[in-house]
Length: 446
Image 1 (cartoon, rainbow, N blue to C red):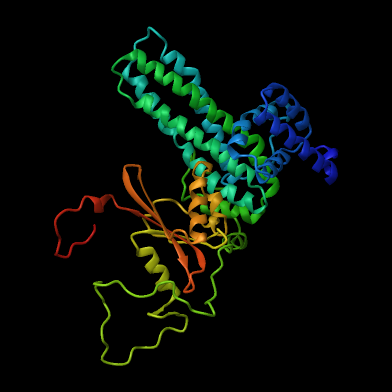
Image 2: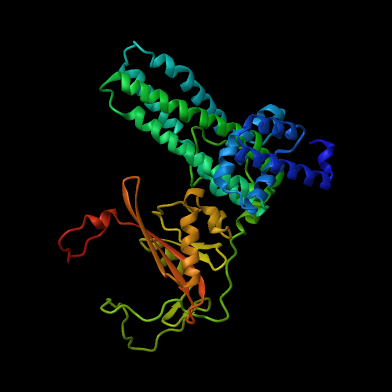
């Protein structure tokens, strides 16, 4: 980084200049001139400053959608101004090295498809089954990019937000969703039955022309902007945290190496971000009353009941140890997530069949940052209505990978009606929707 930017005052001035040019990119027609100015400002500049400029613009009210549209121009300016740097090396298996290895594999695959598709689908050339099958297999590998994006969005962005860098997660997540949509279009075109070669060929080439360059552009943005910024910003324990929680999302095309093995202390420090809560001084229950007609398993004991365990949490209707409580949450046929009154994620259940992945890194994260920009307005509306007391329940159902998913949000209030937070309850009701008649005999799920 140039010596010019070592002065905080000059750094602030550079950020203000970047903000002005980014505003020009999203509001003016003379984009080439604005991009040229942006490239000049970025010469000798740290890419982190662009992220800071985006953060400040978002806080000042510039819509995320506008910055998303400016993202490609910003990346083009980076190409023109910032020298390519190899960056520090990391052992195989470190999150940075894993992201880089996946990007290298994605780049090879996307470029190969771009180069070979025009030859494979040249006009006048018969479309043979084997090449089409090979194309579909290659597309299967390319679709693994979703795992790469999920780790970035739920783990890397989470850690960057702790350092005040929220712009990358909002802007880049929206770009990720655009790429996902273009890849779905590409997939539909490739998997369509080849009844008439000309329309099929045209649809595949058009979809590939939109999806593959977008994947390559995102690789460039990650390698030259996002990852260098993360390397300069995140702590060792945060990298270990990302490493320890990455397997639940899976890997993209290549498996991570095994050279990176954090010491026990570093791993303990990384996992200590989710502290075990102390028992509350005042034990209020969020649940009052009962359900009429519900079957009770309570028995009248012949002798006085045994006292609760020393570490039990006392409820008005009984007592449970923390181990029992965790077991109950995990056995429930629903996924639970609790967001407190300050909109921060404080708890989620960890059942074996979770529908939507929840890494422990989200604990303490603003719920607004856990959703892609396109759904943020719905989240804000629900929270506002719950806090104002206008509503207590919001309900949705969606088709998710062929399953019927029911999602409900409940406003949690204390006995005085004060808002304590929101509980999200998600359930896969695919099987239940197919039930018919009655079943009065005991039957076990296999």
